[in-house]
Length: 385
Image 1 (cartoon, rainbow, N blue to C red):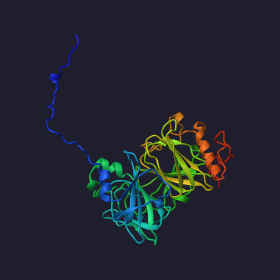
Image 2: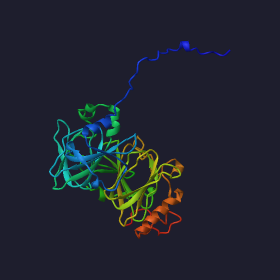
Image 3: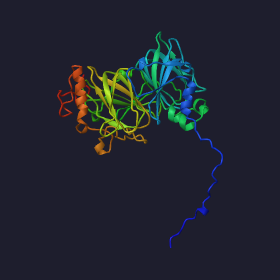
Image 4: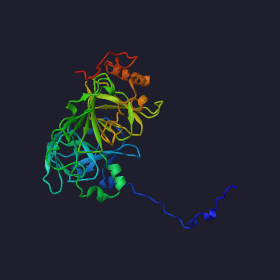
């Protein structure tokens, strides 16, 4: 005998007879952007960050723009800021992480915790540093020209998760495990296994010496940066003239700021590459990984080394949460990783690269890695000097 379910056992409410309002949760991040009143740009490719038009942003000491990728899920954003000559930002602290790269100009930043003496460090074009979480800070332009920087932050998910302005900007908690005001955290650094450099300040990121990373292809070199105890991550990679890196994929939000060289990046998600987009770049440009499982690949078409700084949220498989190497970024997809090996890439990739080199009268140096290749044998395990 089959049991029958009776609707009389269910607690059914009467249908409302009056119209109901929609339940709406305010987007705390978008509301903050509106309160700031600064220009918001939605894009993921920028030829020249120093040429981007800005709008007044008094709290930051001059002008600025907030850069959002065109993606509802934003694990990070970027604040492009220009401080007027002799100008200074308002003192502030906040509960989201922030990494800063100086594009032009020179100046200084003062960092402090309530109850402690401030410390000050100087920076110039090419400097990279991190604002310790919820520490007070203030930037100063010490030159006669505008100083412009790009800061990648964790503001979107933090604001959307907490939904409270005072929690973000008026929280007194001090993260002393990240910053203790001892005057030593903006000087020097320490090298660990797998090219990890722990520091909170790089005076000249474009010329920092890097370490071999042959797994990523064609003589590339790299350093992984651990800054201010952040969950946000950063690394610097460089690859030689006439070469390109292997493609790999990960989630959105990695901001790739070009430090030197000229070239382009290819981005796609679909297996047939029907959504392929090419983004040309030069020093001072930026490409942002816009969506989940987005393959991206970088190509040097100039006559000098090409170097970029990646400022990114989370781990993206480069490191496991326990701090141990996850070996995803440089592990073939055939082995469960996220990288396409040269022998597995679509032939169109190399054809696009050689066609671009031909326009510039340059020689492809990928013959040791790609077959067929119309170029020559180039570097194998280190930068060609």
